[in-house]
Image (cartoon, rainbow, N blue to C red; front, side, top):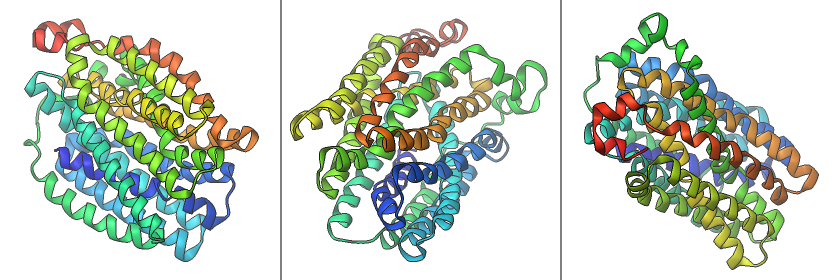
Length: 393
């Protein structure tokens, strides 16, 4: 299970680390680059609403494998499109595939992780997301080496993608047996149990808003941190990539330590603390002077962004009978951040500079701090599952 999360992160980071190459090879400004990255988010948003239904029908193993195939093809094609074809259209189509594959893969593995968490009856989702972050650390670290060695994105992604696919295919076979339980009812029953009704649930929508805000906090670093450090602090290309590697390392640490904090202090208080860390980190990255101070900012930003998404997935899955529908809704809302974020930050970056554009992310931490209250487990679920689950919220 953890391997599947790690490989998802590795593939994502492998492409993200080459974003500066995409900009330079295709001759794009920040606004155009943001629009191009939008294709990846569009692909994810197209796949996410269907992913829960597919998991309910075919099982998590099949959906993860299918998503990995599509994502690997997309990543490989993106590298070739950038370096060999030099075509914006080709790269956009490749990113649609990459986004769709990652999105389906993401929902399926989170549903599997939620079932594992329920069976263990303690907070562990964040540690699966820590595995994702470890994968991004590995992907970013490898990118530092290949970038410093002047290896182009075509060869880089053409080697990484099939390896990721092969190991993911093997690892997904070790998922829990498919559940023919109440979870499938969320897509087959009418009325309150229908999939569409999850879009009308205030708690589910509030969790989605929280996840969206934290997704912007995380995703803005994924898309723009490397470029912002290069443009705003005038560092070498490889130093910018290393900054991104530091960010994902901090996220990994936060996700490893996070379950202990969640079980001890509950979801809201833990998320309020991480929100404050993210805000301070963002301000230091943008306004700080010198490598040390900016590095501390990157570290705090990564720690602060670490728990919002995994806690949102856990909260959406509190009731196993509605998990597939609610996770699809929350994931779709969260991934809307990746739809709007890249172009908006790109356009803002053209106006005020890439680095200072990141200050806009801090605004979204306000609704995130309010919405974390929705992540508390519903009273009925808490009473049913006992004190171990109640301690989380």
